[in-house]
Length: 214
Figure 1 (cartoon, rainbow, N blue to C red):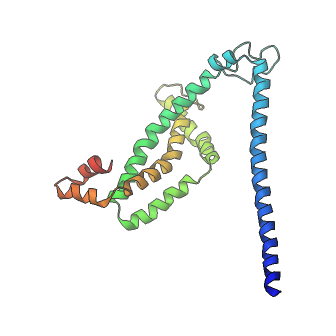
Figure 2 (tube, rainbow, N blue to C red; figure 1 turned 60 degrees about the horizontal axis):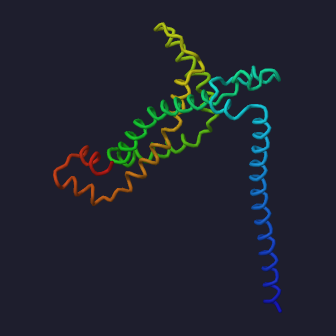
Figure 3 (cartoon, one colour; figure 1 turned 90 degrees about the horizontal axis):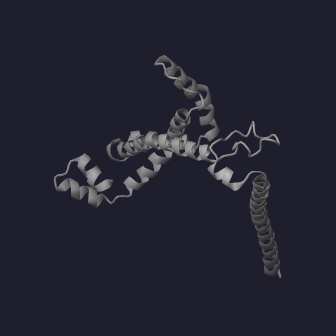
């Protein structure tokens, strides 16, 4: 009788936990469906006013001046081409910053740094990866953009504070921890036998890294 009572209580707890899990899962799924439906509804409303061709191939993006009824879509104010070009330009600048810096820092941490130095720097990079992107954006708006504008003015160039260069540089700095961490994990995953074999055959450390690790 005592054992049966314990089993019954355990079954009740299991059912409560199962019900809680199902409820949480249902809320998550319904929230996702609601977001998708909201996006679809707003997109349909948008494309009823702005033709798809004007959106995909328009060369002007200025929603602040195109929200009036007589300007919506007529002047190409919702063209996506500037957004796409700006995205690719910023991504290229960011990649040119984070790629080399992240790669070389990962090589140094994995192959040259002492264990003590690595134990300090590696967690610091992972902490930097957790900084919210809005912090980097705030840093770009208050420091990087004015610095670039002042630097451009000093050499006679008109550099806007909203240039892609500022956004690309900050995005590159923001992604350095991700590139470094992923590259470091890939480098440390290379079998030691391959590295030792290359060194044993007379390769220098840099040759081993270039020919075997990378």
